[in-house]
Length: 63
Image (tube, rainbow, N blue to C red):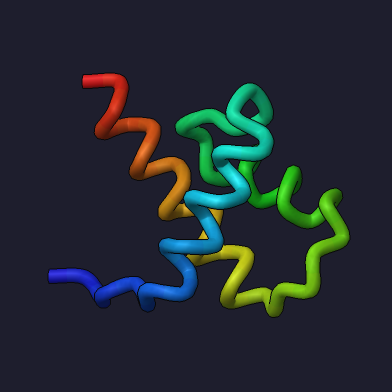
């Protein structure tokens, strides 16, 4: 089993996804690069968790 993602990361990811729905995909690396380009105050860990959570959300919604 994997680690649980903190609620603040999930909330922030959903907010960012709502603002830029066409900029994200199921690809973790592309999501990570886009989050870096936003110039949002996030640590490396927060960027990685947010990018992976967004990719997971999009994969779930696609099915």
